[in-house]
Length: 77
Image 1: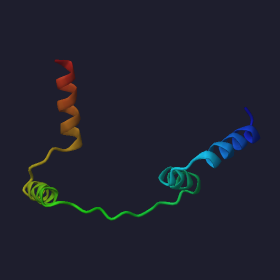
Image 2: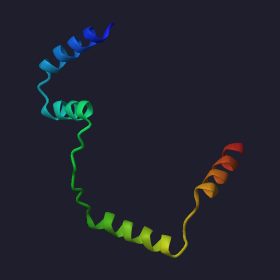
Image 3: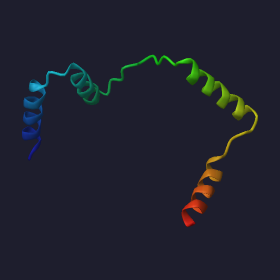
Image 4: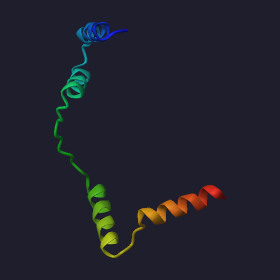
């Protein structure tokens, strides 16, 4: 299939789409346009994020290298 055939098939398929969300996604894919979204977090999510931040500040985290080593060791078992 050459470029023109692909383009014609895409246009024909898009003309049949009734789903507005799908059309918006396709449009964004073709234009590279990004739709900004505000995410609304519930109390449990906010609490989990705050807890994670405190753990990080307290040095309670693993580096990528530590995780990679642990994963390699686990896979060898």
